[in-house]
Image (tube, rainbow, N blue to C red):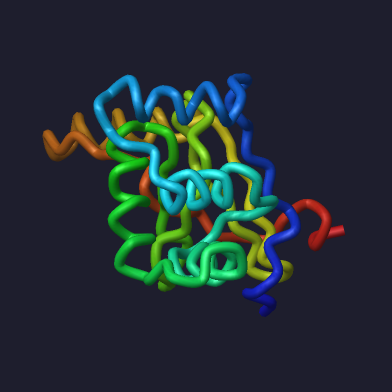
Length: 154
């Protein structure tokens, strides 16, 4: 089961530019440090979901002095501001990606490791069933559904 390759990433990007999104950070009273900008650009331009460690590795290639705790602090802030989000795709650490403005669910292929994003409405019947049976209001956007993708099944 391949875990490293995530070539099937299909995240919807915001139609706004990186500069507009970074301007939002400033508009909300936060400084735009070179590290913060580079961390955001790394997540925003990635072709796959990235762990904090992968983001750290990429950022260090351009900004040697940045440490992992700086990456985590900035990821937390960018997530609090709604510019990025993370999901736990299996037993691994959280993986970060840009927000698309639309809540979504992750479908992860157990064979090739591809990740597809589908609208959260797919899980709405499950959410309603959980609510009616147990009174529990479930957030079904923070986990992944595992299976075998169309390409690997054919």
